[in-house]
Length: 146
Image (tube, rainbow, N blue to C red):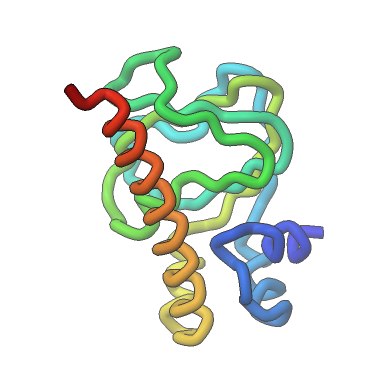
């Protein structure tokens, strides 16, 4: 089941099943209740998460309840910390009963470093996702321009 979920996740688009089966070994599902914190501002891990069911909210500047993004089924988060290997820049909180797939960041990083073709594909997909987010942010900011 997890291989199918990974296959349907944008970051793994185009990655062959044999590699998804290897990546599956360092994934785990987590069940969360409403208001459970998944990621806390300044955490130092760099795991990636995919929403399986439910919805999460992304808070910045430690402002509870003020969400800069809401991510539902199929969406990913944690990818910025993964790509930068830096502290978390936001809180991520379950907005309702939620299930996420946690992908161990260090193990994924190690796998991608030892399988360059897969690493290239994942990073290319990650770049597309981040560019889409930047386009959306640019558009939203342009709406507030004087």
